[in-house]
Length: 152
Image (cartoon, rainbow, N blue to C red; front, side):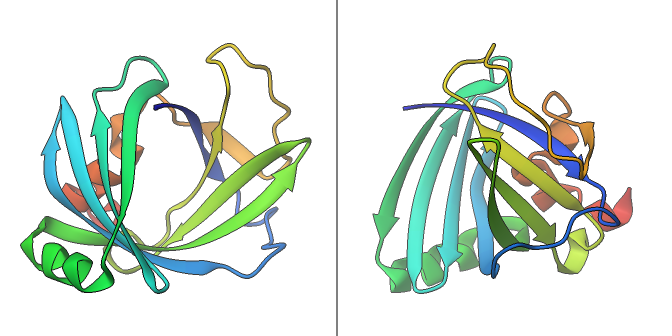
């Protein structure tokens, strides 16, 4: 599967959660530039995700649900810092937006993502978007695991 995603910083003075958020903890088994292997715990569910190298705003993404206890073991094997965040999901102008409020070493960062069907797809930006960061690798979660936002 190919993931086509744009990322944006959120103006926290203009954005207010419209739904209840869900805690996510994720760690990285590999952060090689050609492939990223992530383990994620979201509530009682756990996932192993493999992402390929980015080409523009597209990249291959394969995700598999795994046993929760396996995820706990894998999280202990991860490199660097776990990425912890509260994820909110909101619909705007026919698109589903995921807004992540980062915690712990990445506290202060609030970022929104929207998945597209095509790289050239036009979207209407919500008023709470402040800046696009799709091409800035520093805002990839795998980068944040190695270089926490609090150290910038």
